[in-house]
Length: 287
Image (tube, rainbow, N blue to C red; front, top):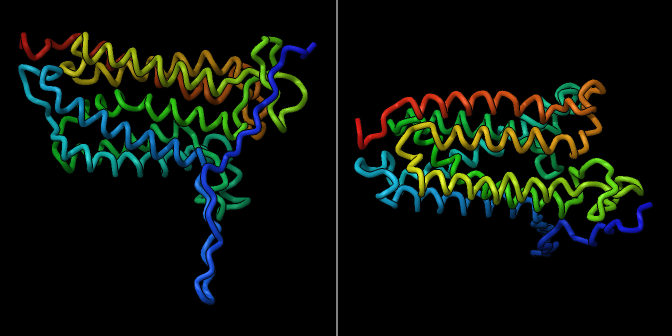
């Protein structure tokens, strides 16, 4: 029955391991750099450089000028990083493991033990960008737009790291590309991490790239962010049907109405509202 299944490759989640190092009576380490951490670092740094390139491409904003400078993007990286880390972790705890708050509260900041939520990270980044916009007096929707255009880069790397870690696997499948993950039983499962990397990452990035560079979406504040929210929400809601729900979720949310689906619906509605609002406004050239 499972003859065509693919055995999960022997991938080490640790990219680099150093130590321990003896310095006299002091011992440092061991130090481990995991692929998951590298995915976050690569996503943030490449996303930052992409935002800089968008701000420096004058035709994307003409006849107006970009409302942010490339130097502003440097500070944007700092605030976005805080939002991703704090929001992602708190979202994981609140949405998926709320009992951690009273059973083991000291584990809440233990990022190295795993457990991050995209939707929590999205809320965290949104609040961070709101703070950035107010302190820098830059248009909030434009800040959201450039951040949204770059976000699929991090999603692409992050989902690949999920696959390397052998986590967040999909539901059982008889498809020939089903993967037998360690710790997931003998049945082949959808490599849903790779589906998400392709669709939430590469495909969504291409869609947003076309919107910004071929349809001038950055000239209509909120349009790029709206396209991202709708695109991600639809992809995530669809893939929840092949993604295995977290084992610690409430029993009522472990079928096909999952937490990921419920959290994606507000994204779709909010994104649709932003798109409608942006398209009703005249572009700068005809204002």
